[in-house]
Length: 96
Image 1 (cartoon, rainbow, N blue to C red):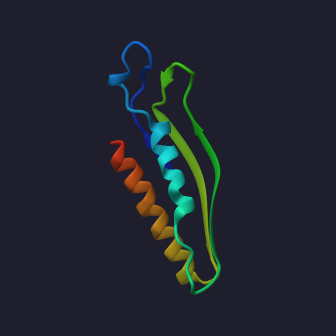
Image 2: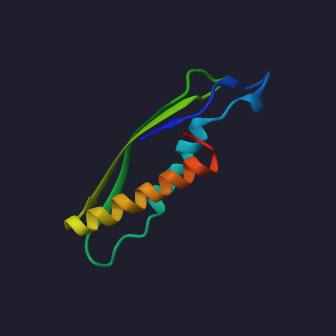
């Protein structure tokens, strides 16, 4: 999953940027997805990379995510819920 924002200097013109790291952080709500009562499911965020410096608003953020379900249907359940959470995080912070 890749979030694309807009880089800017965090001190001089923070209003000119759009922080992709914040969107990726909001997407960590993936771990709040309710597990199914129909079988074992899980989700994991294995990597998250973003930013280029401490005083620069991150223009890109990248996450590697895994969903698992005991059955194909349960995996689809987790995958679709994850897509919803990720899209909501992107929408909330006006990401591409």
